[in-house]
Length: 206
Image (cartoon, rainbow, N blue to C red; front, side):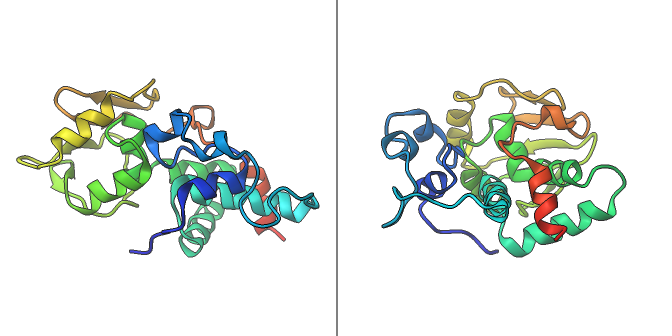
C-alpha cells in the first residue's frame, strides 16, 4: 500500500491552511501553520504567480493530502465519479468521505487519518462482523462498524474519542461500545473538507 511519508506540517504549510493531518497537535501552538504561515522551501516567502492552472492544481493537491490519497488513486476516484449520475465534484468528495479511514476520523475513533489507516491496516476494525484491513474500503448505507474483539488498540481509540467534536448526521456512534452505524451517504453540505471540488473538475476537464 503506497503511503506519503513527507513531513505532514510541511504539507499543511504548502497548502496555506490546516489540514489536521496530525490530530491533537494541530490544535496546539506547535502546529506548523501557526508557527510559520508561509510555504516551505527556499522561496517560500517570495511572491508566487497566481495563474488559473496553479489555483486548480493546488486545490487538487489539497484534497489529496487532506484524505491521504496518492495521485494514481485520486485519478481513479475522479474517473469513477465522472461516470456516476449527478455532479462529478460532489460524487468525488462523497467517495473520498466514505473511505473507512476517513469515517473512523469522523466518528472520533482515530485522531488523524494516518492513525486510522494504521488501525485499519492492522485489522483492529470490522464491518458487518467481518474484519476489514483496507483503509480505502467504501462504507455503505447500514454498515455496522465495530472494534475487533480482544484487540490491543482500545486505549488508543478511547483517547481519540476524547478529542471528538460533532459527529456528522449521516453517521451514528457509540463511544462506550466503540461501535458505529452508517445511516446514509453524506450530502455535500455535510462534508467538512476544505475543498472547492469544482476547481478539481476544471483541472481534469482540460
